[in-house]
Image 1 (cartoon, rainbow, N blue to C red):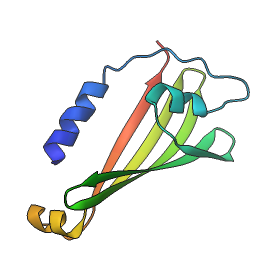
Image 2: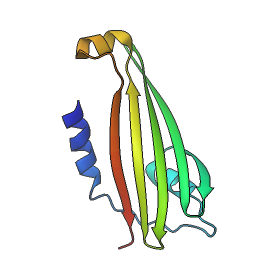
Image 3: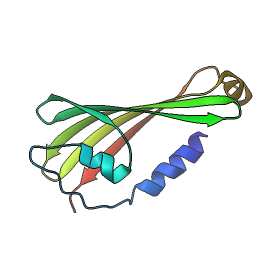
Image 4: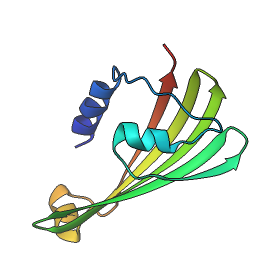
Length: 114
């Protein structure tokens, strides 16, 4: 599963979509670009936190994925993010995979002006 997630992430490395952010900065622009629903909170100047929860139904039950994002605006052309994704599997599915713990993935995301 980890290899599959890493392979998917590598496909996104070359992802390129021009975005123009409004003044003052509104990170909901990222929501539009990624087609997600992240609840953003400004923690201090140039630093934001966001969280998104997704649920998928399977034959074994619900898979719940919670993504926490720490976003820092470094400059006009550079935004760094740290994402922690926690995937909780239904008990029967986790047992089939040989795990009792949720899967936790840490990812660094960088947005650069080109």
